[in-house]
Amino acid sequence: MNPTNQSRESRIGYAYVLLAATLWGMIGPLALLAFQQGLEPLEVAFWRATLGALLFMIHVSICGQWRIHRADLPAFFFFGLVCVGVFYGAFQKTVEVGGASVAAVLLYTAPAWVALLARIFLGEALGRLKLLAVGLTLLGVLGVSLGPDGLTALRDGLWSPAAVGYGLLSGLTYALYYIFGKRYLGKYTAASVMVVALPIGALALYPFVNFHEKTLIAWIALAALALVSTYGAFLAYCAGLRRLEATRASVVATFEPVVAALVAFAWWGERLGYLGILGAALIIFAVLLMVRAGSEARASCVSR
Image (cartoon, rainbow, N blue to C red; front, side, top):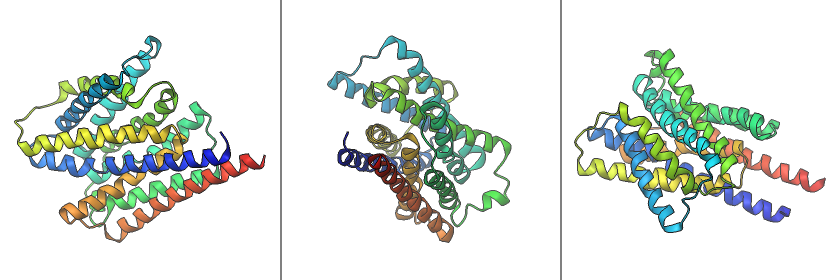
């Protein structure tokens, strides 16, 4: 691919991942709406996976993308069990024992996990700008997640060993999305991956779910989670990941908590506070830094 086309593809990739981050940023507000209707976190996670699977089944039925090589089925089973079942469950358990702020901070250790795993399994280089962007991302997510009131989590002892353990597990299993994606998205479409993974994840969650009677608003919230933050977000994410390195995509995706904070402000009047605003600025700066690092890497290749 010539440099001009490569640059264009990268820009498209960043746009897709930012779109995915924006759609994922709706998870918190939509889940909170479901919680307000009496649903528990694991039930929300179960229905998100189940309804999302139905959408992907319709997609592959229309587009004819069912076929998966038998040799790849164990990897798809692992992805569904770990990156859907364990990830969804670990994140919700972190929210339960540590609160939403602690869960968000530990979930977005993912870029650090991705940088390490991508170096080991994908051979991605770790330049200074890339490491700086990862570090700024972690600080930015900390600021956005703690915001004006989240510091009470530190005072109230919500950073318990259980919360930290579940949170780091959610960050690690979330990071595996990127590694798995780079391995298999060259062979399969996003729909082909998720039509297998989501049902496996839903089955893994099923034994732990307490089901409740649902209002119309609860079903609307669950349907929006499936359509917007699962089906739409994963299609956009996969389109971006095909065009970007895993570490770059993971840093850009941390725009998600910024979106969630803005939606929370518009929807419920929740304030970011000075710490949250600083964190959002750091995340945006880290995204721009990652774009610059990619441009410099392409320029270096051209000069050679």
